[in-house]
Image 1: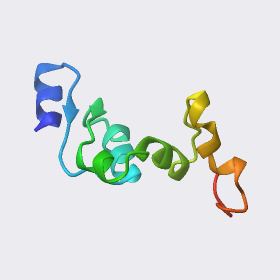
Image 2: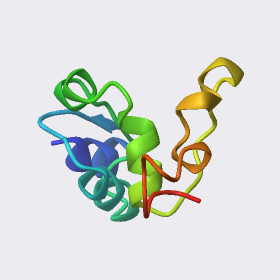
Image 3: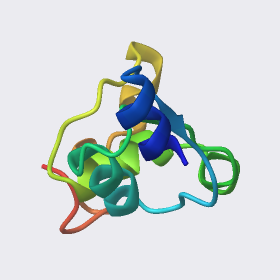
Image 4: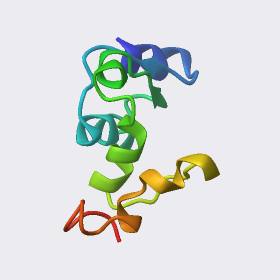
Length: 84
């Protein structure tokens, strides 16, 4: 539906609905079908969805200074093979 609105009205659109994986979100944006996505259940299930999605897609997400202790690169013994 969002794709049709975007195409016919030529306005930016957003889509929602059971987006729970980083690659799903990336594919929707990269396809040009939508301009942005909104994540509800995915973020409720994984409150750190943005961090995990960035890692899965090979990007680096910003961490608030107070949260840097959570970054996997600071605890390689706990998170082997994770973001470096």
